[in-house]
Length: 358
Image (cartoon, rainbow, N blue to C red; front, side, top):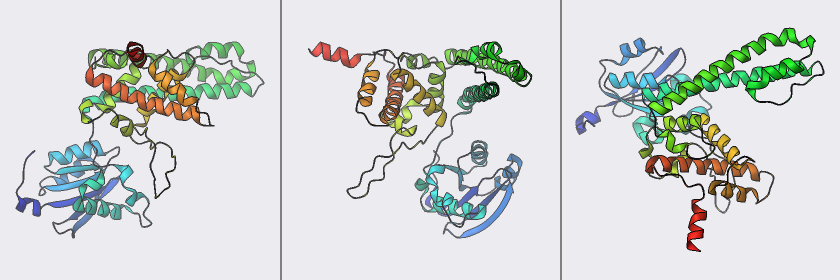
């Protein structure tokens, strides 16, 4: 990293940008923290380049979001130091009783000027990883659309006193044609055609993602050693984490994905709270889905399954839910460890150790 002299650092400007869909507000602070200028510009690359290119080197703070990727890259091209703030750490903006775009830009600039660490800077993934992750997200959108259509057809059929039996998504259209009353066919037939088309597109994405995982990310095979973890989950995990060495401990991955409980201890009071749900929501959903399979009736006998079932035995109304989240968190740690070490997964490693000691 290029080093700057103390004089240059002392003269450095600090800029806060509150990003909106159509236009963005900015606030410029001088080296003493006083407002040097404020304004508004369109949230477009040409407007940002015109405003910030040629300006003296500055520290620019903006909130992570849809536009932050290209904005941060463009600002770095213009020679500025960019801080992409974590939105979860900006309660000072979201809970303010005097919230407006110019004020938010001013607050971002003041926090970056006073102590940038308060913004909990985040790092964008590479363009290649984002491109491949978009394939995973696109497939998920199609799955959601197909699920909504299937539920819609089921509601139409129930309105005439019939019912489509429970079945897999790929067999739904066939079952719907068999059990659908004539009165509902006129409205449901076009929907069934769209469901078939969506299934074909989803199948195309599945084949494409298999090819991407095999050719570009062969280390996903290490993660797929764990029964219940398929190509989709392994690829999403690799693309979201991107660099496994960014974590000093594998246990930190669970916290990064929002699978640890919140903490609000005060004095002798230590309440049991829900998980933080920080980080990538899609990957967290996939890990929870894998945990359901591991603890379900078709899950193989493994150390992870045994550990999760013991948590279920503790009883209580939400014992199963807590066990699923705990297994998902432990699964994230396990996948990261397999990725870093390249070891062969042993499903009953703990049991083998006990038998050897005996």
